[in-house]
Length: 245
Image (cartoon, one colour):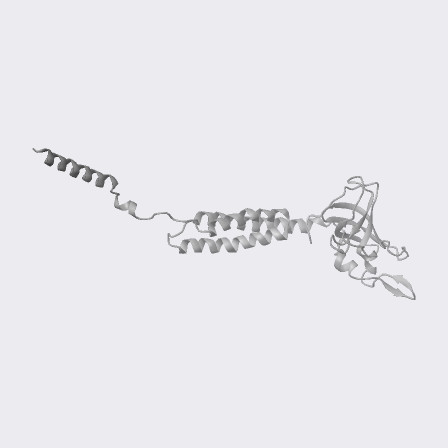
């Protein structure tokens, strides 16, 4: 065998080997990556955010309701992709989390609302039933509004906010405001926008930065100096409000 023929055979063998080494099975020719549908992670995030529904927050329940709607939509959207996208399990888990938070969060909120007002006390909305009714004047004398006067001497349950105090605990009295907006904290509250809460029977209370619930007997002094609170509450209970409405 001549050297030329031997060289040709070696070259053919190397070429054949090279082609075989680089050849790929047919199944690797297809692009088999399946992307995750963005709806799956969205449902999961809303499911986690729905946990705020257990804080007696209406806003948290709204998030949970959104999670249910968007979660169900996410399940159908991912399944409608017919394998072109994945993430069904994330959509299902997120939806279930939102459903549970909405259901049990609502039950917890309803129970808190029904039990926060002590027996024998009348629930009164401070901004709408007292502050909204300004004083009236007869012959130059200040009088209570006819819709507020019947509440005087009654055992009432109110919600509002503490004005700034110098102490954080052991308070025997404090100024009680209808809200924490521009009316009060950001400005000069009107006499009908605030009350003086006085603890009775030697009780004291801590200072709270959030909404506060007060139970006690509502009184009024129409002869109070201009700019001074007219309403007072002889309180038997002061606590952080369990609900915001």
